[in-house]
Length: 142
Image (cartoon, rainbow, N blue to C red; front, side, top):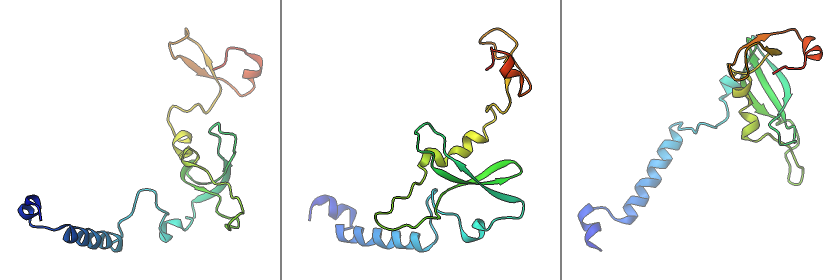
């Protein structure tokens, strides 16, 4: 034994045993990571929530299928397509983390929801909302 092990009073074997017991206690106690599946109670669709299908559009070209849970016109949860046959050799396209984070882009306060026309000088950030038919008539549309 070296002097360091004698000073601390714990051997390597005791440390490994303690770490294993602590890990099991955390796992049994319901410790979860941030990217785990929703619990069974949370997975039940609420009456005011509807599920719509969408496609991922993060410029990779895959167009992965997404299930969007919508409540009060706001996306609350994003799932990938888990309805296929998940067997070896049967390729199933599922969205990556960029696609699963689409909720942040959809619900962002700076997202454009309507056609806008610049009314100030370039760079001033002054815009006004226009109708959906005007962009076809006007050319300087943001």
